[in-house]
Length: 459
Image (cartoon, rainbow, N blue to C red):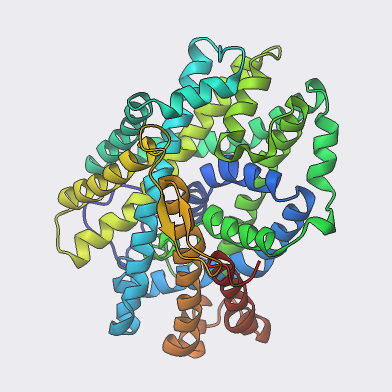
């Protein structure tokens, strides 16, 4: 986030322009969730049916949730706990849930950011990933030392820039790199389809829904991916919203941010899935998918090393742009609610995240045999560190936070006061019955389906 020595409040506009706010908010949203996680969920979720489900959920879920969180943030003008407490002192726990969720997402987000950095460097220095890119990937992530080095380079750079208030350097670059990433996604997509045998079959799988593949798990994965990718339920928009001026139209901004994020995710799938089909990559690759595809396809194409280098450079800037906002959520809460100085708050947040990074990274290597229990109606399941953190945050804390936020807006804040903040005293329209139905019925039903699914009550 921009330089912020002292917490600003809603009366002090942090953003130089509406465009600047949208770029920072989009930069926080667009990152690994779109380019890394979305393609492998879409790939294993049936391709076209996952895409159709995802788009419908974005239309019904993303915009109203971004509106609610931003309005709460602008009204409160503080950290993600205090903004709830300003309306009702008993409801600060919703902000704490968001803080815990965001810190735990950073347990694996920073680790994967380190992988992106490693692959970017490899493309630049040689573009050589050996005969089998998956062996390169597995050897790297299972090594007890190498991934941690890249992990801590990413974490150190983010912390350094936050400590010295010079994150604007990366943000200025990101304003160029973010559009560049969109362009590279399009270029890489056409590149892979022209060069990779079987890619057109992959495009067909990606674009045309097979309704027989739809089930509750596909729906739950699509919902949680919307939450993860757009940044809903983390405290991102309550934190960013604290500095959104009254001049901004929250409703229009929410629409633009949601659509930009969705376009980025769909473009990423457009690159990865056809290329994966062409390479015969296993649909169950999961987190390895983007790395295997990029290393296996683009290193062999004319100019592929150059394009691969640009792709990962652009992606690492997207990672940094996201992490500034992610870590700032906890930093601001520690600074204000726990009365730490800013530097102590940054160091404390980084220390907790760093410990989680070590567990996640080693969970792919020396601690691979360690399994954590997950309660399930059909019997206890056991997951590795990455899968457990992903499940706990994405399938429990994010939907729980959204469910509580909907109830908070509806019952605790009330329609009248919410409408006043959201629309700037009705300057930007009125709340409709449709808006209220989304908050009271549709979004809560979506969240309940995810929660019931993750604990095995419905499948």
